[in-house]
Length: 139
Image (tube, rainbow, N blue to C red; front, side, top):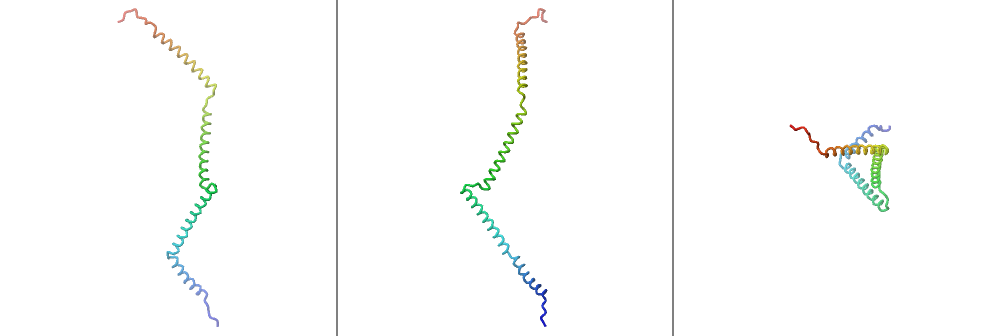
C-alpha cells in the first residue's frame, strides 16, 4: 500500500510556517528603514542629476527648463501689458471729439468771450463816468 499523503495538510503547514516568518520580518523596523534609505538615495540621485544637467546646459549654452519657464512668464507679462496699451489707445480714440465740432465749439467760445469783453467794457465805462449828483436834496 502506498502511503496516504494529505496535500492540503502539507500546504497548510507550509503556509503557516512561512506566514509566521513573513509577519515577523514585516513587523521589524528593517524593511521600513531599508525602504526609507532607498527613497532618500533616489532623492539624492535625482538632485545630483538635476544639478549635473543644469551645469551641462550652461556649459553648452542651452536654456534649461527654468530658463524657458522664466522667459515664458515674461512673455505672458509683456503680452498683458500690450493688451492694456491697445485697450487704452482704443479708449483714447473713442473719447476723441470730431475736430470740426471741436473747432466750432472754440469759435463759439471766442464769440462769447468777445461779447463778455464788450459788456465788461460798457460796465467799466459807466463806472468810470462822472457821477451824476442828485439835484434834489438828500434827506
